[in-house]
Length: 215
Image (tube, rainbow, N blue to C red; front, side, top):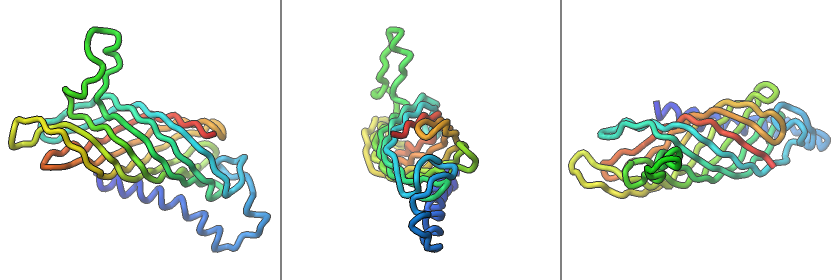
């Protein structure tokens, strides 16, 4: 399932480049190069781009060895995305996520908000590529993939000692959503974060609600 998701994410981000390649192959005239319209950022010409920022809240799932939990996740990403075709955007992004170490509702009681020392949840930086294909007006499908520099704590099957780990692995995801205008959109996404080291497997998948603002 995880390999299928990663393949889907890579396919989505790769397919977003096809309209741009087709445009080059057709040898578009100078008047076509700056044309507006299409479903993706219809008010902008092809070749232009936007800085963007997005925030996500969701739920993770880890069920490997001694771990079985569904904590709340948080993520913040930013980057730049180009309009490479009438319906397609392709961009670069960097971000940071926490996949379940904080319980914000504890701010209203006497329990700790930061549960990093009690949980095995991942946190770390991401860097990768992303793509949007607006299939009908504001309705879009998306894909993202890249590297994941994570930290985590866990137990191996062979001992009872808690280990602090860090490594660079990979992530991939896909989603659907709706752009209400050229600046704001909401979407649902499913992402997989691979994290495995020293026979300790902390790989996690998440389902999230994402809000994006494009400048």
